[in-house]
Image 1 (cartoon, rainbow, N blue to C red):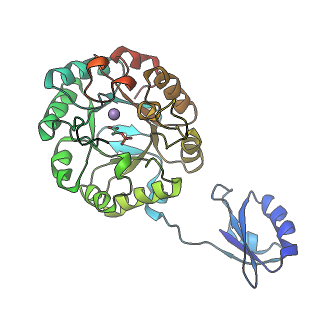
Image 2: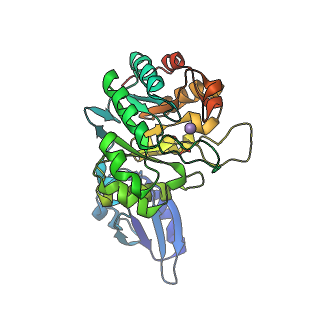
Image 3: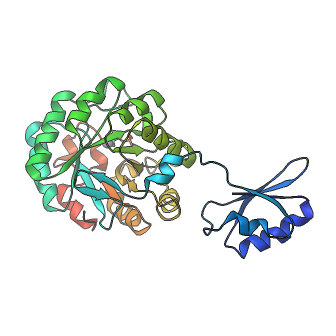
Amino acid sequence: MIVSVGSASDVKRVTQALAAHGQWVARVEATATEQLLVLAPYGAAVDAARLREIPGVRAVSTPASTRPLLDGAGSTVAVGDIVIGGERRTLIAGPCAVESEARIHALASTLARHGVSVLRGGAHKPRTSPYAFRGHGDVALGWLRDAADAAGMKVVTEVLSEGDVDAVAARADLLQVGSRNMAAFALLRAVGRAGLPVLLKRGAAATIDEWLLAAEHLLAAGARGVVLCERGVRGFDHETRNLLDLSAVALLANVHRLPVIVDPSHATGRRDLVVPLARAALACGAAGVMVEVHDQPELALSDGPQALAPDDVAAIGGRS
Ligand code: PEP
Ligand code: MN
């Protein structure tokens, strides 16, 4: 809400009166004729008419939300018969890339025993270098689906381009939009049109607002729910691959009450930090975690240094 007062001298008094109604002033914008007190979104639910009665207040307006669909979407997303953001924490795990049919089957059955309910794995991989392994493509989608079905799990996998949407939507329960594509608006619209739930990773340099507006694009195009995924933003230190923004997770989970999953694998780039940060993520309100796993990380075709051993997943402590 925005509270308008006439003069700068009223700002302090009205700010104090607003606090008594559980309202906090996020910032003050001065125009030629008035001072606009922009209230923080997390204030107590209050009738605007009550605020208009405060002496010195000229008007109270409730601007239309820039994210009406996300605001109304609630804190849970159904992926088949599992609920992300509900009572139970969701464990998502699997390899960076689906490397072979045998390997993904063996991994899925181990992970299912550790309480993992969603199997991840890239078939179409975004890679920084054009010479790196870019995934086995559509054939790997079938391996992933069959392995998940055999183990009683759901599937999440990335949609890299608009041309892949139909093939991925035919095999996956949850469509992943990767960090590099968070603001690829045509892709967002195409993914949304598939009418499935979407896991939206945060861009490495995206503000929270940009990330949430990307989620709004997905919902506006028809996505059946969006799960946000914090995977680290670009930091200044190279000891870790990225900088895991747990403040954003706490804000989205506890203040905005949106479902957020944390990916400590891509955030840190190192397996020795994945379990501690997965636990930290759950402690600050994440709906679950997504981790990369490999049975022989030294042979992994991508992201081996950050892959947990399959049995390490048991140490995270979430259940779905
Ligand atoms: C992934 O999860 O497979 C991936 C490529 O991660 P990100 O988009 O976060 O880099
Ligand atoms: Mn990876």
